[in-house]
Length: 486
Ligand code: BG6
Image (cartoon, rainbow, N blue to C red; front, side, top):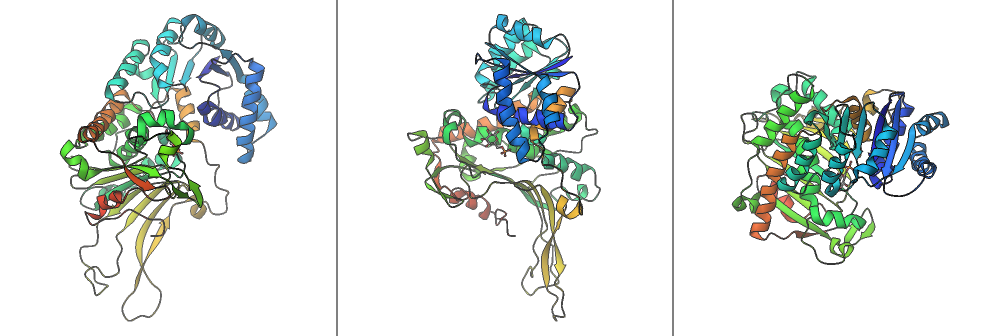
């Protein structure tokens, strides 16, 4: 028998993401037959009561995706169990160990990271950190390099690095993996993927949601630590890394860590020029009034809900190619995309002006709301005009275009892929200790520069793309952020 233990099994992450993901995996016949799923949390409820809650949440999600069936649920229900525990107490965890048995055990910590250290120590004492055990850690691990190392050292006392799976759910997104396929499964992009042809790269993660009730967590982290340190730097790594020699965990992660090491440190003197901090004030998002962050928080706060940064990668491939990243809450659209902006043609033979009517080629890798990869190229406008007229067209790799009449595959929850990989022990899509360390190091420099210079977040209206300074970050260099309609 193998076991998956969900610490924080009744919490938001488990109910919203992990248990529905497990249902979908089971529905698709992807879970090992003998896998038991054990929810573990403080609440003193019975296994029946817990399973009833799981049923409710999973059914709602599966019905919305037209993937609910009673037979799959019956299979999942038979796997489910629950135990009320104090996860920091070895005695209490012994009961969990008894339920999990002596087979392979994967423990997912979906609890407050401030408890990670004490939980892993208790797990070790209770026999849940044996050689055939793994641990999955949800972000954020730490708030800066120092606190990351403190937690991670405690983890390392109990588990070998090969047993540790640090999750960044962005790595489980289909289009993110598709980016790897695009770069390394084709010959046509790689020769162009460098500073000879690429002008700059943009990474945008826009969210329409506000912080709302999450402020007790968020106020301590802000957009820099909540999104940029992990999701956005991971995306940057996948765009910028050298071709790994294999898809095995170490080959890929070795390349990613090299990118992080090559990030130019942001000095306090530079911070004002290359970073923007913002915080939303009242406005309207998608036609609905939205409150200011400080009103949700109940008092003024210096936490940023928006960040934009220009990163430079000091290596041969990327010298001189800026990577612009921006993310924020209460922006006009939920949109996550990576834009590879190619350089202009050196000379236009079409127009009268210097550049004529040629737009620069642009590869847009869209992760949300739709999953799509599109390349804009110039095309001749049909017709008999004397002067040849050009128009940009988008070549799309989306399923809708290429899947012909077939229904697109169900859009998977990013955690499905990651849970499956963790259960198999494949850590390619997880973050290695040295990666997390480097990412914190770079982010700490930004945070220190801000606090050293007393940079307060600039106001931006809810429903706008952040403070004006974020546009200036690009326009100062003659560039602009990608918009939907281009
Ligand atoms: C989480 C952050 O890691 O990612 C949240 O803590 C954020 O603040 C979320 O909303 C965004 O994830 P996704 O998959 O919806 O883009």
